[in-house]
Amino acid sequence: MFLPEASASGLDKLAREAKADEIFIALLKRFISQGRNVGDKRNSPNYAPTMFAKEAEAKSIKMRKSEFEAAMQRLFKDNKIYAEPYGRADRGSTRIVLR
Image (cartoon, rainbow, N blue to C red; front, side, top):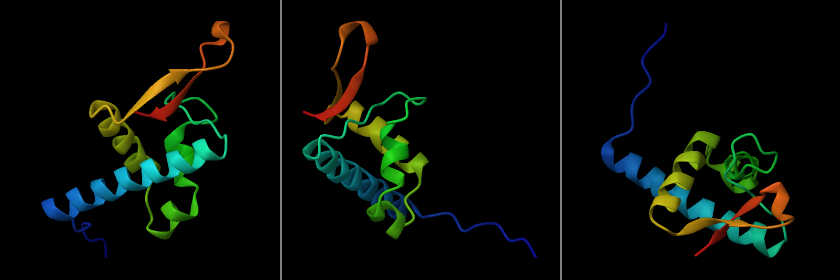
């Protein structure tokens, strides 16, 4: 029998979003300290949400790529992160960094 999935209440959704933001920032800090660049371009091999969804912290609580995409958008909107150019200027490469 197929039953509809129980939707999260408003408070549960807000808590999950806050957790996604928190993990996004923590993973970004770790990647930066390791010299691993992540970006905001969806088709890039170093797309932050894709990279972060593969990490143990995300897997342990079943955090999906789509949740990291939403977290990244919230963090950009709140000016907590930004895309910084790096590398050769003619390539147009950017990486996500903290403000």
